[in-house]
Length: 364
Picture 1 (tube, rainbow, N blue to C red):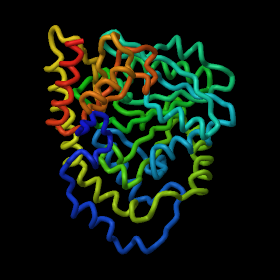
Picture 2: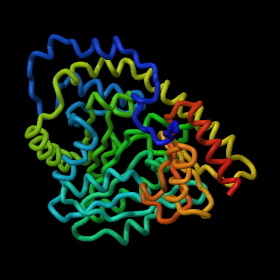
Picture 3: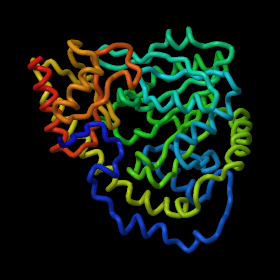
């Protein structure tokens, strides 16, 4: 039967109207024939990244930026910088499962802290405090979180700074979905790229910002108190200089691609908004399917009856209707009753799949 994939997170497979000529012509720069190795990446590319942050009225020094080929590589470099074998990092739960794999292949142990839901998502600070040990080196934040779509609030940041300062911990902030807010909220942290209260590593890239995961460009912004920042940057430079992983053509093309950001970004935001509004409308009133509060990102979490396990529901939708969704345990939910869907899907396909899910659950 035809498959309706409601888990697709690759924007290049979601039917968006990419400006092909402009994207590909940017790779034809004659400067691509000249190799200019720089541990931090080409200065002009780092300046293009600072221009991106200026949209948020955030001032970032290009010297604070380290280019990488992906956010996964950025995580690897940060883990190698901060941790020895067996050291620990605190990771939110629920969150994206890739973090666990990256920690494992870098010989880093994970302890989880919880994000609690009471109509909104909140950091459970008690779970952070009780899991800090002598070998804990950092707290990971995902801003906004994937899949909960929750942003770190300013009051939460104050508490995080107090905890990090008292235990000599760094903050790692993954901001790849920062652009995809559903609404404005002054209570949120704008970005971590300019935070200097504790040693902070802000990670992002064009995979989500421009919807170009195949072009392989990401970055780390290092910030903090001057002395700590300088030592961390100096050591990180040794790591990045050992790899020099970002290709010259990609770096030379970056500014041209950032010039397309408004179009690429808007098209994705519009798609996400259309699908989310349909989802909310379809699950109103007496529907047994409820949508958990989402502030941003590309995913939505559906709370469903526990008449079947999450895995049984997922298998049922697939084998009987060809609808693919993800079970909550993929994202480390502690119990059954949750499935996760991507809001990137083609709207007609998305609506058809959601209608099937709601109808089948209502009939169960």
